[in-house]
Image 1 (cartoon, rainbow, N blue to C red):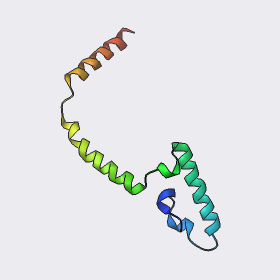
Image 2: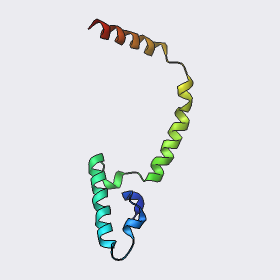
Image 3: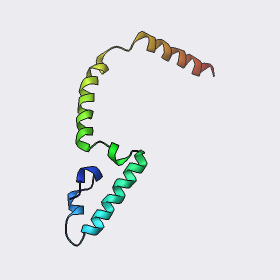
Length: 88
């Protein structure tokens, strides 16, 4: 059985006896292309479920940061950058 989560293709594309060969080939090509573009070996990719879980957790952890003031050091660096850009 083919793992639909790894390819990101809908299960309907991989089901059906007459389309099974073409669907499987498309899924394999799609998965290979995605891995190549991402530069990630197949065994190192995270499933969509894991990526979604991590994304939700990271958003919840960092959500409070948007309400905190920008550190004074960063403001000074931004001012210096703006001054440099204006003088050039």
